[in-house]
Image 1 (cartoon, rainbow, N blue to C red):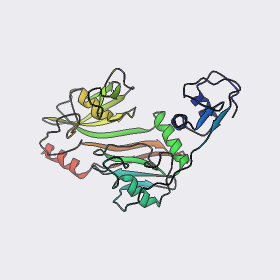
Image 2: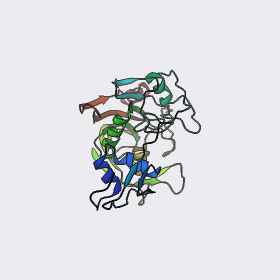
Image 3: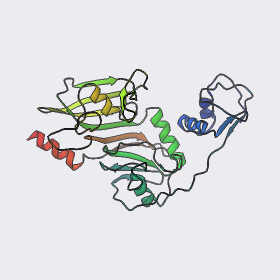
Image 4: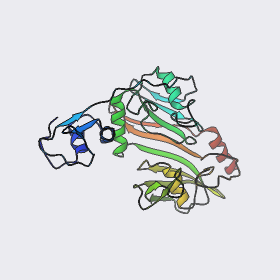
Length: 295
């Protein structure tokens, strides 16, 4: 491909000419699969008239991941995507310490290996993720076209994600927005933190119910930073109940792991364009805690 006009970042220029999202293009640039005039480039490079751009799509590698017949709560499925209600305690994809028994292993068995390869060897089909102890809705792509289009919607903040959570203390505001940048903690590299050098993070919340020592919230996130809701709620003095990382985790319900549930997803189907609105009911343990508080 020869650049015909100057002045745009190379990642934006390619996105306008090819059926690829900016996210996918930036990943290809990082992996040196996009060359400008035969040399590696950066996403911020300003394209010049006459530049020769070479795009090499990497082959999907064979993976050693083993399909495993594990329970799956499938909320929606067609030939392009699957939306599952992930159980609390299930890891999304293999990593150090969790080589198998993950959602990816279960999805591979269900789909017989027919998944998008864009996420890499260990994350086939995975477009976005949820923490191990966060339950709820997750989109999985069965092909690259669906994966790229969902990724683009997420990047453009067109996917509406609604969570339900129980936090410590009485939240005084009925509705509010938290806008604080989030980045890697300088004190503990395993944690995230509100930091001036972090990336923009925007969280909206609405009080659904107040109890003696807790508040039940509906939360919408505009951005998808790692641990965003957990970090923001802890920062304003109302950590998520059970969160072992951003609070002491102690609670009267003996819950381990954050009480956070991805309740609703609203997005445009990546192939048909149909408006999708899917919901997953609260897990039983969460519903029981609320019943106990109400009684």
